[in-house]
Structures are given as C-alpha cells and as structure tokens.
Length: 388
Image 1 (spheres, rainbow, N blue to C red):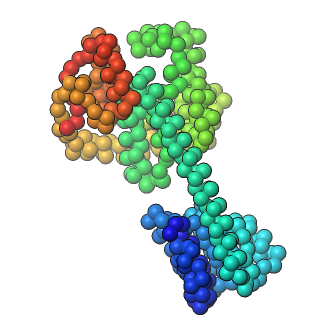
Image 2: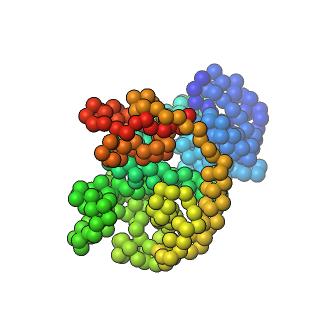
Image 3: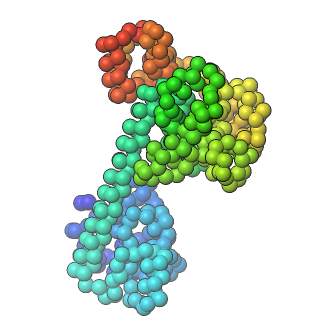
C-alpha cells in the first residue's frame, strides 16, 4: 500500500473511527500513548519499515503530543510529524514547532477529508526528503569508490596498508564499544590520496630511500593539505577532509600543520588515525608485534598516551588471536583466471619487479580491467595465489 502512517491518541474510539475512514488510503498503525508510539517508531525503524507520517494528539496522559513528537524526531528524523489538538493556542504551536518540528496542525474535531489531504502532503514531503538523502548517499558512495580505485591503482602498497588499518579500526570499534566511525573509515581508506599530487621524481626518491632536498621535504609535508583540498568539496566529506589535513599533527603539537590543535583539542579520529597509520608503517607489512608498538613508544609525545595504551592492549590480544585462528586456504591461478571479488594472497608484479597490486587486496572491476590491458603490453610473474 506504500508508506506507513502512525496515528496516536489516548481515545481508542477516535482511533477506530479514523481507521475506518482512512484504512483504504493508507497503511495505518495506531498507538494509544506517547510511549507506545515511540516504541512502535523504534521497532519500525529497526525492521526497515519506518513510518512516513506520524499524527499525534496533543493532550495525553504521560507524554503529551509535544514530548512524543520531539522524541520521535530524535529516533526517526525523516518521519514527517503532525499534531491533532483541541488546544491550538499560540504557546502550544510555538512549542510544537520548536521541539517537535511539526509540518501541520489539525484542530479537533477535524474533517476526515482535511486530515486525509494533510497526510498525503506529509507523505509527499517524506518522499522528497528520503529521495534527496538517497541520492546524496549514492553520490557520496560513488565518489568515495572512485577515489579509492584511483588510490589503489596509483599506490597499491599504500592502498593495501589502508585496508589493514581499517580492519584494525573495526576491531577497536568493537573492543572500545564505540559507535560506527564512518568518517574515520573513509579517512583511513584515503590516507595516501595527498601523495598523488607529489611529483614523480619525489615519489621515486622516497621509495628508493634517497634523501630529499629542503624544497622536496616541504612539498611532501604539505601532502595532507592537498588531500584536504581534493575532497573538501564532496558533500558530507568536509570532516573527512579535516581528518586527513591533520593526520600528521602530533598530540604534543609537533608536525603539520604548525598552527594546528594540540592534545585533547586534536579530534579523537585524528589521534586514532595517527596511531594506526604509524603502527602500520612500523610493521612494514609484517605481523603486528610488540616491537611495532615499541617504535611508536619511542616517539610517545606524538600520540595520545592513554589512547595508545588502549590500542596496544586491544590489538595485541585481538589481532594475534585472529592470526592464529585464520589460516586461509589458498590456490595458485594464472592472471587470466582472476575474478572480481577474489582476494589475492601474493603480490601481483610485472617480471621487472614493478608492483601492480599488493597482497591481501580484493580484486575490483577497474583493477581487473587494468590487469587485462597491461597483460597485452607487459609480462607478469605467474601464477598468483588467491584465497580459495
């Protein structure tokens, strides 16, 4: 029947009458108290069948209509809220608008046709809001995927490191009982995006371990600023851009940018990213060990000491247990047999040693297409090992 509508009133006879008149036009549910309505809204959201419109009476025992709609707004902000009241004084209207953010008032007794038209308008508003949100989320997801693909192609080792950091972050989310940190998740995926702006000569010198000139060091130092500028204009990624901009900033005030925040003023996601990123670099692609943490502890001023201790305690136990428990079966295949979604357990390299894709990467469609094109021009070390 379409979007769902919730009617709230402490008079069951009124609810029965409204159901008789409106059930043919809407997918109706009813509640006889504010608390019952809140539980129904929460359950509907959890089930993936949220209410498009909620119409609440004003005067009810326990939670009144204003309190009820305010709580529903917190639980389901997209749900359109309306009020049915016989007490439509100015103060009630002001409170309802400010706290419940309602779309319409209906005065009791309300003609069924008027209520029907109001609910239809509410459903139209709900469709508009959710359609815009879905479009934004799909645009955001598509933009991030493109950026990740570009990074993985241009810097396969850096991309592989970012995947490892994300795994650690997800473990910590569970261990620390934190809410999902989607901005940090994206930032960890894109930590190396600023390096794409570096001249190839500098990148080559870095990989060869050669000493950089003062000018070259300055260019490298400003890579986080380039990262911020690359993604700051993507909707909803402003905070991600700021995390990347501050990724080299130390807890003690060291690092880039020189005028950045210090200590607890440094956002939590930045502090955690810095620890995970430097920890990943300290492992040099190997297992996570106490020795890797010792590298960070020698530069302890750069890190939030309490957070570093918590990360150390959580990851050393959890990651090592996972390594012991996971012994993925493997099989060797030629490059021509690779498929989208497969996880490679060995590097994919040209016969001249040039790395194309690092071990433990999951094959994506653009990567597979790139491999097919390259195979027409150059030769590869084969076979490669994939997770069975």
